[in-house]
Amino acid sequence: MVAMFYGTMPDGSEIREVAIAAGNLSARVITYGAVIRDLRLDGVDHPLVLGFDQLDHYLRHSPYFGAVVGRSANRIGRGHFSIDGESFQLSLNENGRNHLHGGFRGFGKRPWRLVDHDQWSVTLAIDGADGEEGYPGNVEARVRYLIEPPATLHLDIEATTDAPTLVNLAQHSYFNLDDSPNILDHQVRIFADAYTPTDSDDIPTGEIVTVAGSVFDFRTPRPIRQMRSGERVTFDKNYAVDRQKAAEPRPHARLHSLKNGMTLDIASTEPGVQFYDGHKISVAVAGLGGRRYISCSGCCFEPQFFPDAPNHTGFPSSVLRPGETYRQSTRYVFSRG
Image 1 (cartoon, helix red, strand yellow):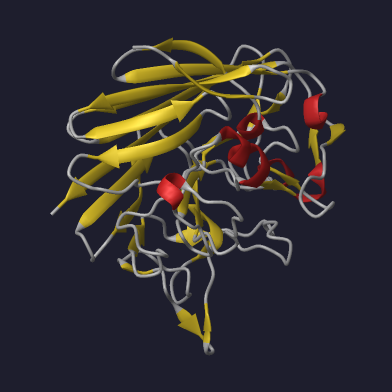
Image 2 (spheres, rainbow, N blue to C red):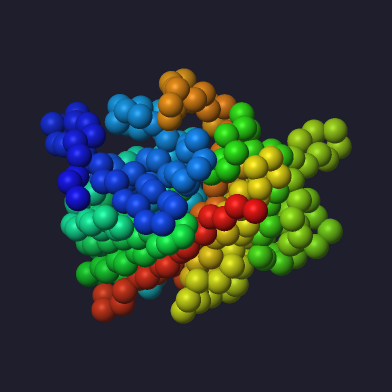
């Protein structure tokens, strides 16, 4: 398989694209941000993810479409945390108050190295330098995408460090299973009985609260479109699937379209999954095939450690130490019927 030229970064470096396929599923992955640029199922005439046809649109307009974000995904309140009594201050790239998805030049906004690829898989790597965005330690991360018949996309991530640091990586694809203008009529099931409430800045309060009796209860399938007091509810919440990592992927979420009968099942080793309905999407340029992306054009399920984990003793720890290896395995299984 040949890695094709996709675009040129402002510094002149080239971004490559690799096409992988097996069974009924195919994907296009670019070295910028380890982005899943396009994802297709045989017999379906539209992409299953949101993306762009041009590199410049990723650089200027992408809300992390298809990227692997980190070195610490999600939010860290005020960008501040401590490890072993030593305090660290991260960049404040969200509203000048909080740290989001690794900062201004997090892993989802940088080129990755193309390590290896074949017909079914692609492996990418990236280095995070000591002090970058305020993080301690030099980190190396590797991501492997593998497609397995009939229609499963495997994501496997590993990372190591030379000093205690935070590592919490998440795949940030936005899914739309039936090409509708929005995904509000898609049905969602989330395999979690608790979530982490947040303040007005979407920073967790530190509580882990049952979903029972709340609008956040997706233990049985229901549409994303939910109303409360005459207004539509928006979703951008972390669900506590478990209180620790698992050795093997376990069910996290299911997305289903009543319109075409397609289902996406997501399983992961991670303790949490962030469900985001895409309500903030507002993209000024055309997406894949000339599509226009508006509020809720796609939704995300991001397996990860809980947001702001280093600042809450009751959350699973996202600290990685020398001699340890961060590992994540996540599976995306597509089916129709």
